[in-house]
Amino acid sequence: MFAGGWGSDTVVDFEAGVDRFDLQSVGVTFEQLQIIAQGTSTIVHVPDHGEIVVLNATPSLLKAEDFLF
Image 1 (cartoon, rainbow, N blue to C red):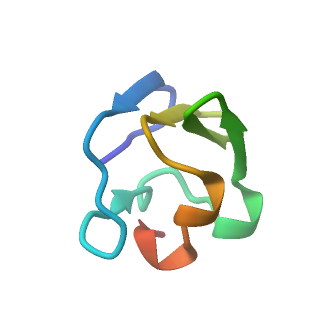
Image 2 (image 1 turned 45 degrees about the vertical axis):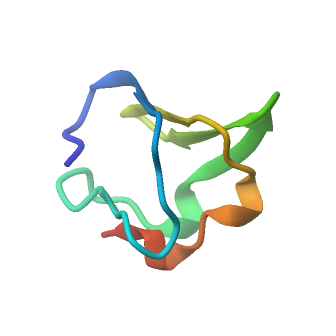
């Protein structure tokens, strides 16, 4: 679970279709997220709240179903 203003968190073992990012407390939608590649990782920028660094993942790996809103 991520709460507003957390800064930057790193996820080292995300498994698509199994794990979920809980963003229910920050009031954003999937469309508001900025998901970009950075090297072998993916950065999920949550406007006005922070970012999630997902190691060893490509942006195409992350789908709306991987998030709770």
